[in-house]
Length: 322
Image 1 (spheres, helix red, strand yellow):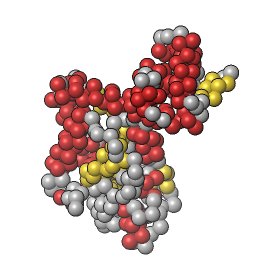
Image 2 (cartoon, helix red, strand yellow):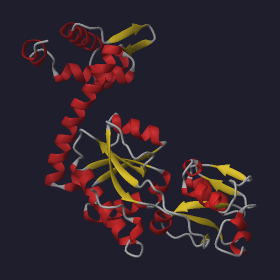
Image 3 (tube, helix red, strand yellow):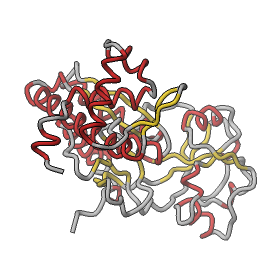
Image 4 (cartoon, helix red, strand yellow):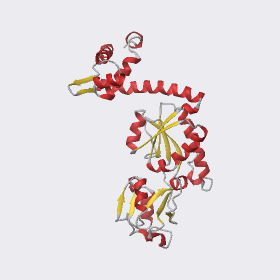
């Protein structure tokens, strides 16, 4: 395929924009309404694009359209094209005035409660009109959002040492899990500094803390204990905190969330030391996509926050590269 004759002069950004709208809306009529053009304009643009490329891009049916295998391939690249254009324009605006920036962040619930708001608070003091869009979800959903360029960065504990071909990880810190309960809980009066005295407690544990090799499993196994039988499994930090207030349950919280979130007068940290996570909390970005200028500001500020809270415990910091 000759780029100049067949592609460079014959595929317009407008046609690609219409193609993206149809793929996202699943309907030519909905895409036309979104773009404020007529349906014949949309239909003609798609026909022209299919003619130039020589392949069908959509399966058409009365209930709507779905991309063909060729359409899916083009969709991935077209998103990248418009994302790079958007990012370039936003970088120019951010370099001129960071207040003009918008940063889209994916985050785990624990970091959404501690590190993310602390970093945004500090940036907002310097750039009060800078915009932040925060989303949470599972690791898989956040990685999909990053791959599809719906977020600029995501921040969470790494689930693997190898980020794969699509992503790159920038380590921020190694979290330590703290054992916490309510000040009204009878478990605040238990003796000792190990988990044996809490074997019969009603626990709430997040799914990642149940995985083999996690500090939770290591800590229980080190004392010859199985995981608690009275157990609720939930990744929601809000749910766990709500349950703790009733005064019966015990759970784990990352030290960064306890140190960086607003203090909760009723929360009690029990004197039990667990090992730090082997895998660090990371900021993940797309490997072949230069982070936006706004993302660079966030990453630098996140490192500054971590250095401050790690001053009393340098083991929180990741090892230097190399």
